[in-house]
Image (cartoon, rainbow, N blue to C red; front, top):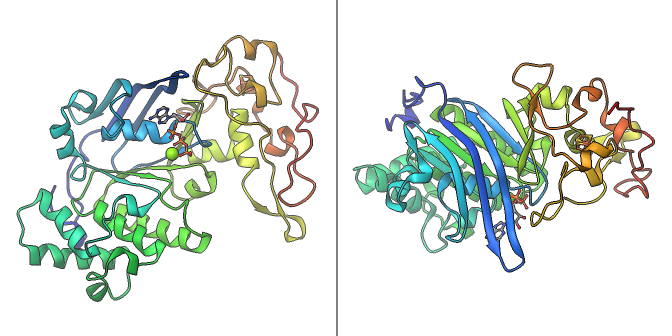
Length: 371
Ligand SMILES: Nc1ncnc2c1ncn2[C@@H]1O[C@H](COP(=O)(O)OP(=O)(O)OP(=O)(O)O)[C@@H](O)[C@H]1O
Ligand code: SF4
Ligand SMILES: [Mg+2]
């Protein structure tokens, strides 16, 4: 890449192409003693230069496995098929050494725990400098100077001094910002951030998200922001992809997904966002039940056991991801048309008291659907 990052000059990189990353029909299975785990069951998406795609879903929906597949970081027993196109290359066909060149230089990954990326025995500055020197022929001194600039960019105070600190001398939020600095050290085209703020408290979350935004804007990188919390993608993502049981169940612009959701599961996620409502009380509307096992999934819609709108057909046929009434907005639900104008509270009942689950989510509040 261009190396002009800290001057604020956005490298031309791949911006003359329509998409920087294209994932097509990605499938990942894990053979286990209990049977075949179908962790990702056909995921396709595109990522345009500078675009932020939020991938949202509950624990176990396949978000991390899908992004590890893109990076070639899955365990050896994983069976992966489909295409992950970066430029003219299908990354799934590359050798480990060829893939290693893409990691860091073209696609960088940020994990939930910054200590996954930082080594406790080296200073933060040394590690950023080494990340730079792994891909560029620059002196240790020049690399360290750039490390200081990067730390400053992501909001580390007294960066010139802090660059000599070890990771344990940083707070959790500062460590994650140091990882962001490391991730952008080589001007990647794509940053994949997997739950980058989940381990942090709310105030620090906001600071780290702001550092990510600055990092993204200064590098011109596109980003995949993975989270179980729709609240984290609000205000960050251009488009949102909702995953359930290894498949995308809704894809659209952030406005499509937040203001005109067409899949009951998305409404459930929206309804379970913490709100400061009437009287300032925090009220939650959780989705009852839990996601299905990915071994021997029964036929039909995987959300059916939890869906207040289910009909007999839902237990027989798994709905395809189909266009809705808005261009580019797709949803996988036999009755997505019935959701026009439906609010989360019409489908999922609010709890009576703070953080207390309702006894029965019931079907009575569900809108009528015609099979
Ligand atoms: N190495 C493995 N062997 C067997 N199953 C696995 C393996 N790694 C992941 N899985 C399974 O794949 C499914 C998807 O896991 P994944 O980690 O992608 O979920 P996730 O959406 O990232 O969840 P979380 O929000 O908890 O991070 C889960 O059912 C998980 O148990
Ligand atoms: S297909 Fe049926 S069960 Fe699945 S989300 Fe739609 S209404 Fe609910
Ligand atoms: Mg995960």
